[in-house]
Structures are given as structure tokens and as C-alpha cells.
Image (cartoon, rainbow, N blue to C red; front, side, top):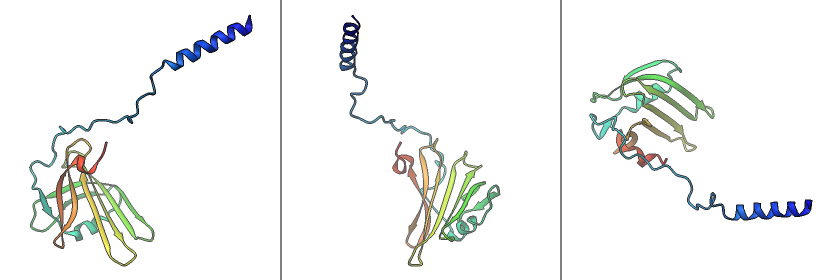
Length: 158
């Protein structure tokens, strides 16, 4: 009788598991992006010319220090915040700073200077907020550095 009960239990488990559809989806779970996020930088222009020397000075700011800086001569774009991270790695070949904004609803400005093997220097930077639908990205246009306004989902995949 024990063997019969065990056999019936095994058949019942096999029948139940063969009819389960919990793991049949081939698509990975994904969140739909919210394209209706509010814009943080609506009142600002599409491009903001910046002075790269100002950004280089930010790299030497200690964690916790307050920043209130005009990002370039000839522009009225003022950025205020607090340094939350300052890192120097690989014998100062990569320097990076992250500043949490106090005048743009908690957006973060991240800036990195990288010294390449050939002696040239590259710069990357972004002013971004996860709660908003627009960002600024640092780009080099005609040998001048400019913060260019972009859509959040052009840079970030959720």
C-alpha cells in the first residue's frame, strides 16, 4: 500500500507541474520607461558654454565641501551643491567628482578627467536627476566645451 500511495503522489505532482505556466514567458521582465517625467531644466538653454578650468578646479574639492560656482565666463548658469564623492585613481590618471545640487532639486553633477596613455586628456560630465526627464551632457563642440541638453532616456535604459 505504501508503494501505491507513493506512486499516486508522484503522478499527481507530475501532472500538476506539467500544467503550470509560471515560467513560460520568453521576454525578460522589463519596466516601461516613463516618458512623462517632469523637465528640470526647462528654463535653461539647449547649450551652456562652460570653462573646463572651472571643472578641473572642482576635482580638488574635498568631500563635504560646498560649491557655488558659475560654470563659465559669459554665462549666467550658476551651480550650487555639496561634494558627495571625490576620487583619484591609477596614480591620478582618473579623477572624478560628484556634486549633489542644492539649486536643481537634488540633481547630481558628475565630472571625470582621464589622462590617456598618449598624454591626451578626455573629459566626461553629466548633470542628471533620476526623477526628471532631461539631463545635461558635457560635449566638445568646435574645441569648446558645452553642456548640451538631452532626454533622460537617450542616456539611460531602465
